[in-house]
Image 1: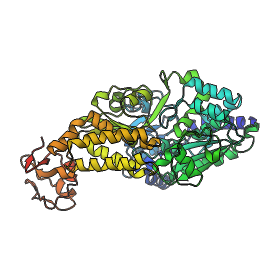
Image 2: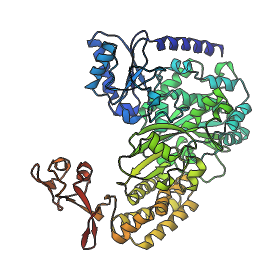
Image 3: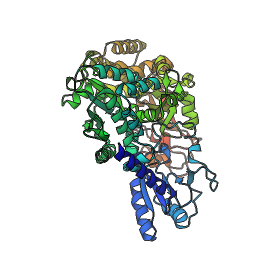
Image 4: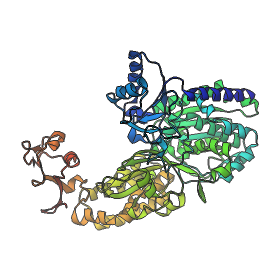
Length: 626
């Protein structure tokens, strides 16, 4: 313990010197979102620019700070000045920014999005006062984008591993008591109280116990776990130490999909740093607690997010769920008591053990304490990684944080492919486990997909159900056969071949699957269909009775034409048409050759003048879409 205390003191001193920044510091957001937007090129260009201009500066890679729609982000901090953030930086704007801010010590205010100082600075707003960030409460994400995820000293300097040291100074039962009083619920699914699982596992007979971190984030559009690991891996690893100590485990495993190479790389590097600092291995910090962590890469099977399937995968078997009981807390990995916690659950623990349960209870609402991270994607203006208190309304998330939509709101899908599609009437619904369940949806791991009027809910339901059907392990009949039949019915409806009886069949099949499927994947698979049937029944009836898709999405129900009165002949549609179906001279109305049109929707989306109409085909005639 004394050695780590000395290292922490040294790290804090280094951090203080670093923060005084006696030379320029350039921060580049280099998590996957930043890299996808061009951060790697900017990193190389920054180093070249400094060399060419014979200037020195510290260049630091940081993780995802949240607003992915602003990526790539490059921050500059000059000696004696606050850190200033520049958004959507390109290889063309980077030299201008660096030339002004680093070369002349004058912030390039035209491109600055915010600063991290406490006082007003050059008319630039404070970064965390930005509309997307101001309503958020950052607990799990407190370090993301602010520290170098590859430097353990920076994590130690901001009170890293203090929660674990506090845990070591008490008994495992006391740690479980702290988690109980904090009211922490599992952040990966149904929100089961964390302390209850831990108590069962700790009291289960057997000398060997395991802790597994479920980082198998397979929901389309979800990236919360990946972002946390890439941006602050020690937060997860410290949480695993705390959980392992509490349940009496000596082995920890991070089960993470192989599609997350950067997260895996930073995890492995962080674990090596822990070993160097005496935080992994035998008798950690001279205590009786011994613990090691290994990384297990999964092959990307969605069903392996289910606890028993995940365990089977680690054991080298095909990932297929098992009937319960016994539950993993009694008999899990290799027949030993096992706890499986989500990345966010474990990442929350250091904050609770460092600050105490009373502090944590200041956030959230009764029965739903703390915060929840979400990936906010879809048709909102501001997309990215967010963290809000449980009990925040969907309206606040979509409009205050997400900035609303460009077109009228239609629906929001919560909980990923296993969640529900909620209509406008639920905008004031508070985001908590019970409220979402009552509405027919789930919290899930935290994906939020916002949709506008251009989304066809029937097509959406088919997409999600097709995904879960293909990811089904096939072990139980309700999921294997039932979901296939539901996909076939939905496909018929989107082709204009459905009947009113199909809606009853979808409802019956959905209810049967929910009640009869073996695991959570099958039990929640019908949710997108059942909720869209419940809240958007009229759109199903339009597809069946009128053979009309109001969103102009279902190809068999539409054909495209040019509205001559609106067409300016700008040729934008001509340029994006992959088959040459649109023709016409510049500045004159164009035409669509329906024999060549593959209904890819490109022209409809591209036209700025709303001159492309999607006409609904109605048995022998054409009904114009308003």
